[in-house]
Image (cartoon, one colour):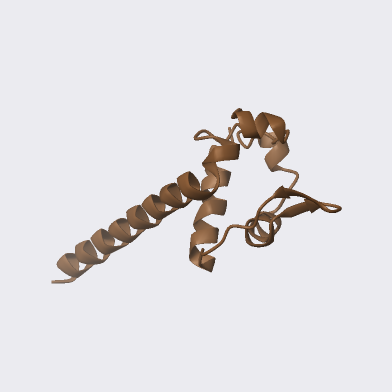
Length: 108
């Protein structure tokens, strides 16, 4: 009986983790991919134009915290009056947390 419950709990956790990953992938594709690219390297035409940093670079990733990444996703990034990154709209805190985890997963 205990073993069955444990298996069911583990299956539920695995399913919810897969769903979060799928949501993060869908949100990345919708919100981030145009500039940051599918691989996070920023080697897209818009990424090159905006001089986006390579999210696979561990040294670059060391320059910001998860809290800073969360704030950037929620509020966008400005340089004076110039918008460098638009705020992501329509995302829940959990969606943003999943995107930050996705960004961290790009680190090599």
